[in-house]
Image (tube, rainbow over all chains, first blue to last red; front, side, top):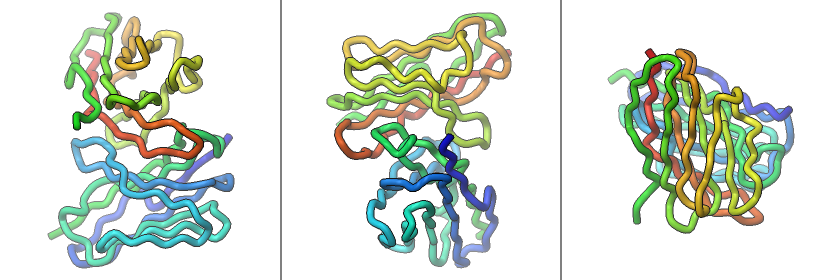
Length: 112
Length: 115
């Protein structure tokens, strides 16, 4: 079945350092979504990428969708303590419809 | 407007008891999802409702788990004869439905502890 994997599982960074999480799907995706879950909170939608090779930015966050639409990345420039949380990618389940298959998440910890 | 709400926020129950968890989706969202999240883990899909269609129950871990959605709105997840391994946060999400893939709006979750 479809698998969505994320690496790394955990990442400790010093405040001000950059951070990247990678998402890989076993199948081609029509789109990919990213969510952030703060400690003790619930996942909150960040962005959706649809086009091959698409790059989108939200302030210090840069999201990229691979040319083959099987992988994606989230890069945070100059991390801040407010970036702490778990970042999940998600692709359409069996590449169809509303259901999502979530990656295992990357937990980011930022040392001030 | 109001987001997804869930109740109770916390539930402690004894092993073997039944529990009901409630989800109120965003008004107008016809798609509703239940997930389970164990401590420090990812999101485990449980069940998906879309309008009046038969729900996708492929993620339910055992026949002790069931869910209903009445009137296309409120949903209840029921766990019968709870076990300690059922302890987790149960998250509900809702979304619009259409030809694309829509963002999911999550509720705050119900933290279930089975003693």
